Length: 485
Image (cartoon, rainbow, N blue to C red; front, side, top):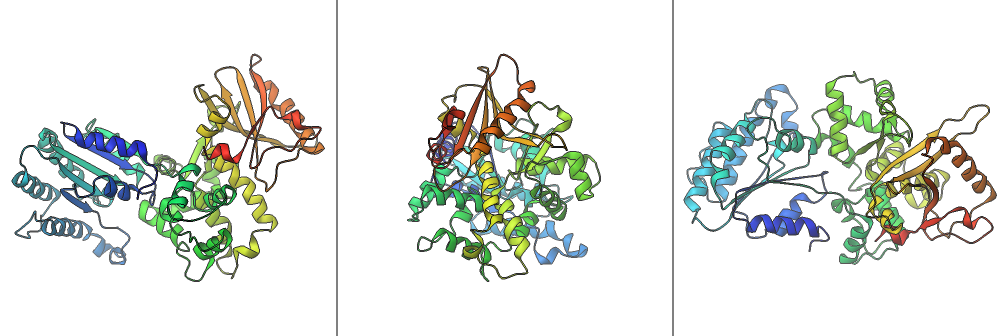
């Protein structure tokens, strides 16, 4: 049973029923459920399917074997044709032009002129090996034949979002403007995570579902590892820290499967993990030792399009102050606790009440909130108001303490919400220290806010706000249930 994805399912079915040739590109982070979505929506309706071979096979470790990747991909494509009754001769094509010609020929033989023919090419970026001519073959297939078949639909999936964007959606060659629909499949929201757990009989409170989200994000493949017979703590132990933990090597495998230069990409992510407010481009270059170049720009774009990090400009700052911030919950958790303890035998049950974990929960909850801006806006009653979101911080010195605001929502209706996030097990109680910190924050930020705008202090927390003498400091309170909306 598929959970969520209502809009995507509706759109794919509409495209299937159309009277035109369709070229559909589905992309998103690896393990997010792209293949599962296509399989469920088009069950028993796929005419031909094929998935690329991963480039990370040990066979390609040396240069000599690496050159054979094209031959292996073509041979595998031939096998898919043969197994699906489309290549009775079993002939292995010599090039991608030949491979797509075999596919065209087989489709023509099966075509009754009315029934929809659906082609599904999965992990398409792996087919595009160096100097393979794959894009030339795909272009010839679509422009020279497929786009003229009113009953043909081609669905391509890729875990490398940057490849789909650069090679297909933003193609400047023969495939320019040819993609008829693009679907970026996002990780589950908290609401969808709750539905997913309910469907599998996993009974967690919203508080625990949020912590599960903090460890693996809304990635269905990872969420599927949670065992309904275990507590949250036991599940985290089993998934990450046990001897045979299924996600113990996932970080390295994930980057190796997605990127041409996985070590470089991991060095960027590791540098960002150590700075919760993010790093500027210059700071990233300094900390990683990477050479400043167009390739570095492409690597940053690839991490953003893959939902590993976000780019934002601190409130009141110029473009030069743009910062990159790691946003993928799995990477944040893995690097902070699994990688740092890989040479020690640790148990999450013993770790979870330490100061390090309590501090991590606070930062991880901020990240959850950034990923649920639409739900926060809905709780504030401003879903229809145009907004921009950012964070703000001020470095302290000998005379002035540092200050920061986790989330600033700058609204078109001349209101600025200064949002603070608190992940606690009980209703949050504002202390005298909190009260004066809010006063200092507003004093520091007021010169940056337009005079016509009103400042609304906003608290985003788990179980609401306890009434005391400072209760009125916050004009709005957003709770965990609001985030699950």
